[in-house]
Amino acid sequence: MVSRILSYVFFLIAVALLGVAGYGYYQSTDGPGAAFDETDRAFVGLKIGENVVTFRLHNPTRHAVRVVGVSYC
Image 1 (cartoon, one colour):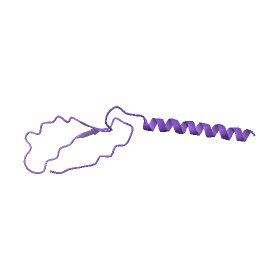
Image 2 (image 1 turned 180 degrees about the horizontal axis):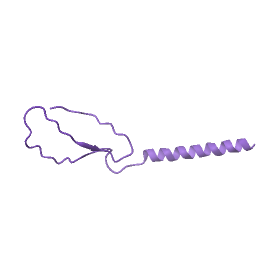
Image 3 (image 1 turned 45 degrees about the vertical axis):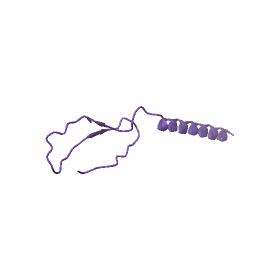
Image 4 (image 1 turned 120 degrees about the horizontal axis):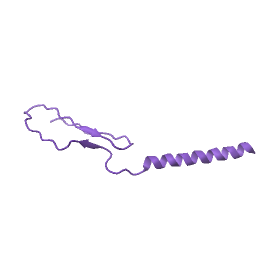
């Protein structure tokens, strides 16, 4: 009898913790998932040919962000 009550209690605790984890994962965030820092750059003095331009990518959220699109000019 006691083991049956304990199993129900642990089951309810597990369901509650799963609900808390789901809420934490799907809560809304303010703003985009990733943002580039220092986007207002002036590219004066670049010569014709291959140039390397580096941007810092900042992710303020707890979610992983996939970066797609590396381009060469």
